[in-house]
Amino acid sequence: MTDTHDLSRITVLVPGALNDHAAKRIEKTFEMIRMDSADPAKVTPELAGKVRGIAAFGGISAGFMDALPKLEIVASFGVGYDSVDAVHAGKKSVMVTNTPDVLTEEVADTALGMLINAVRELPRAEDYLREGRWVKEGPYRLTPGTLRGRKAGIFGMGRIGQAIAHRLEAFGLPVAYHNRRQVEGMDYEYHPTLVSLAGAVDTLISVVPGGASTLKAVNAEVLKALGPNGVFVNIGRGSTVDEEALAAALRDGTILAAGLDVFADEPNVPKALLDVPNATLLPHVGSASVHTRNAMADLVVDNLLSWFSKGEPVTAVPETAHVKAKR
Image (cartoon, rainbow, N blue to C red; front, side, top):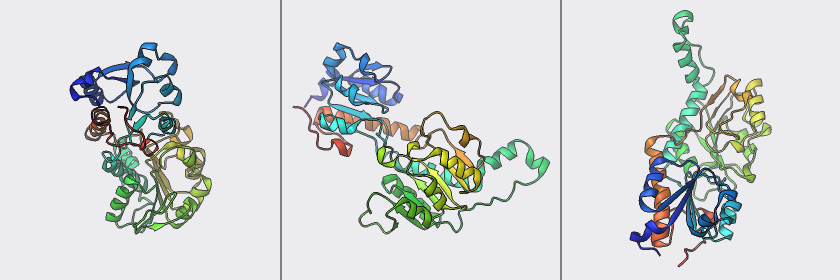
């Protein structure tokens, strides 16, 4: 392994934008090189000959890794890493890390905030006040939605899903869930299919990562099963939802409301979703506090430091857990 005093000789590439706190720590410890995007065509022979680490906010392809033959580790900023080809990295003995745990509570808080906003129409009620309508027209309407008497379903009972479940319990809501497989030792009601879960609850919160296995998993059939009192919240990945079907379900009353923090083609939000008044829409701010983003940034850098000084990462992703440091 490399002595901590010699880390300045290790080249870490930062393609595209990266959290300032992470970039400053990397620049202070390593030789940091920036490039505007993770484009294999932009990799010079000099970079190919010396880059051993990457710190990035996703978007690392197999081709980009292949263009950097000395690459040992990709430290990805975020808990989701579907835009990093981790399977390819594992085959090439390149470590991939992400930033779990440190954002769990913040994202869970955001999910509950979206749920309450969607059910009780709080953003619309605030707009009503700011537009002077309370004075002119009287009190805001009684909301048809409430948390009282609801049963919640969580699609993806991982760290964040469990944190959301604990909050829902504190609100007095029973919880059920769907995963690819049942979580051992968990008392929440398990459903083997997403349609079964949606049919058993009226509040569905999606926390699953992106990828082929979850692509448009929340579709018209799931939304129909959720029912006319149904509320859907997505804090995971936009690709997991059939956005056209969701907009139609909100428009025609198939479900009552939705709260969305993520979209399939960010930052572009489908006009069909912008046009429905019963959707609460946020610009992917689930973990976007200074406190949490700095903690995520620290974990990115700590993974690089641990890898190059100790030969092991702090938070390896499953696809690369077998990768060993080069000696």
